[in-house]
Each structure stands twice: as C-alpha cells, then as structure tokens.
Image (cartoon, rainbow, N blue to C red; front, side):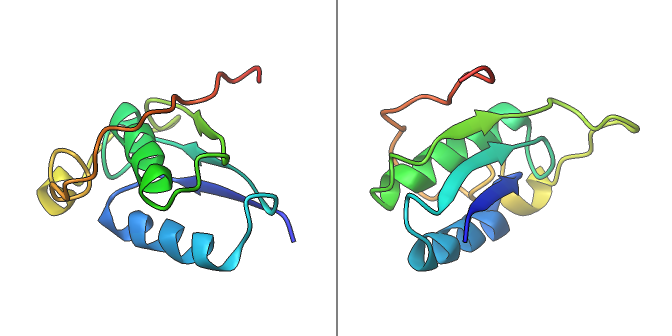
Length: 103
C-alpha cells in the first residue's frame, strides 16, 4: 500500500503521523503534504519535519501546501495546540528542509 499524508500538524495530527510511521515503511509513505489549519502552514511544515526527525524517518519528503483555505479566511486553533502547534513539546529544530513543489 502507498500512502500520502495530508495534514495540518498540530498535536492531534502529530500522534496520527507517529501511528502511521509505526505501521508503514519509508517506501510506503510517499510523502507528507502540509496545509494551513491548526496552525499556519509554515509552522505545520516545520512540525512535520520535527516529527519525522524525532522518529528517525528523514527519508520521507515533506511538501508545503497552501497558506490559506481557498474559500474562507484561515482560522487557526492555536488556543488548543499552542502557537507552535505541538503545545511546546521540546522537539529539536529539524536538520532537513521541506521539498520544493517541483521535486
């Protein structure tokens, strides 16, 4: 099975990503795409990279998506997930970068 994870990584999606990583290999997970939602897309992208690094799964590419919804104003849930989206769990900064959309 092949899997693409499309997410707005706050605390809930961080757990979901970790569960997916437990069941699927690097070859099965084609990539993670991030969008704005729980937090701004840049923060969510950074969170996806931090989660993968924490799980030692850096081969999985991360692609950053749209900065805002197409049809409405962006409403984040920082009051639930914290301004960093992960309620300040002390993950280190990622050592790898997101992929460009053309890669």
